[in-house]
Image (cartoon, rainbow, N blue to C red; front, top):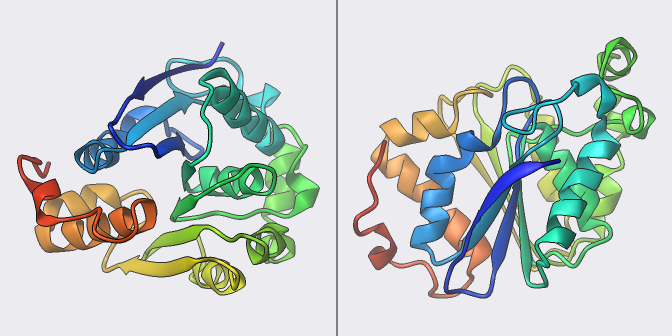
Length: 235
């Protein structure tokens, strides 16, 4: 049983958020979901198997399982188009895989990890780790091909000092999306892989620059305005 929660918004667009690996869980999205709420965008977040309130054994899950979990959440919540996906770290790859078979209007990838298809169905554990630790194994990912056919709006947010995700990955993800209606790469100065949003919260100007880009991706045109900032506590 996947545990999660949803926040409705007055706008039609609904965002589904997919967290990363390790100690990640949906609670880390709280500051970002506050921004979405201020933009009038509803959000749904859940804890993948082996994480947060869902719990369970991580070893029974996999990249493919995480994609199916997110798809099950979308189906269970009857989320129709337009749909936005926001994925962080490993969750970014799940979001990309979902974009292959779902009608996605906006795709936001934060500190995105990508993986070789060889690792997709392998349960998390020693065999999975051995595959992804091969030198530049990520270079064989299918993410480039999937995004080459993506026609929605794409925002990739990268950490300047990311010791986990090579800088080439976010750059190539954006470059691959040649058919996207809008695409942008935003590198957060001084940020690290596990300290991106928390760093933004300490730097107001940079926080709002990222918020503006998120708004532009989710609601093009004049949807993002100064009024969206009113009453939002930076924390």
